[in-house]
Image 1: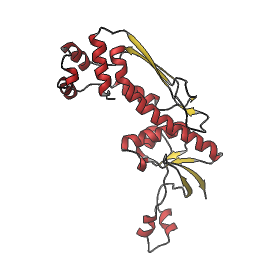
Image 2 (image 1 turned 90 degrees about the vertical axis):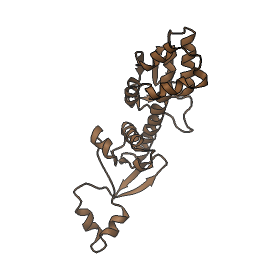
Image 3 (image 1 turned 180 degrees about the horizontal axis):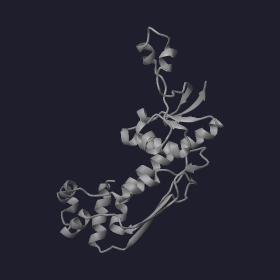
Image 4 (image 1 turned 180 degrees about the vertical axis):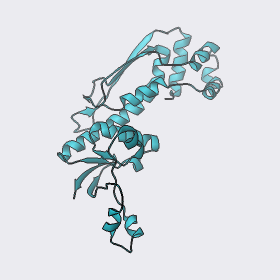
Amino acid sequence: MVPEYFQLVQAAVYHADGLWGDATFDLYVKQAPPGWGFLVAAGIEPAIDALLQTRVEPTTLQWLRRQPHFARVGPVFFDELAELRFDGEVWAVPEGTIVFPGEPILRLTAPLPWAGLYEAGLIQIISQATGVATRAARLSVAARGRPVLDFGSRRTAGPGAAWHAARAAWVGGIAGTTNTRAAASLGIPVVGVAFIWMAHAFFDIPFWLAVLAIPLVFVFTLIAANSTGLTAITPT
């Protein structure tokens, strides 16, 4: 979890002015998308893990010292920033809790100079995960008992984001994922499809015979994809 620059500037101001008391802030959704009657809170555990691992690297400290905004900042601030470890308090709803706009998902209390340094990372992890989990839940409701699968790994911004999205989708109610890391680490049932290039690879034998040779269970589906990468399916 890396603090935003302006939060570091504000931290220096609070520190210089002796505003070292605790501050509390809530993380909540201001307004849900149109038609979304509820939200599924997700990403809480990864967010707290990231919170506990927050560090300001030595190279970043050296860079900060050279910035005009920190030209008059004393060495004590940088010394304390170098030793930054979260020692505040966090309250949060459990993963998968139904929440509504304006309802706190997470509440954080920490010394004012440092509390704001955690804001961006918490928002990044929880907002993205809550969005995916909510879409997964809505798709599961719409599927009326039919399984909903996560095929979104190839559409996310990198391996880490793919794992987080698969995890959030699982919290929201999907029945399986194509993400190998998520399946292995979280126990999510693993699924997949046989793509068209496999048919071309086995052009000399019936395609269905080639698929039967695969020692995994692949689900043939009528796929209705959407922008989240989650997929509502109708097994054949």
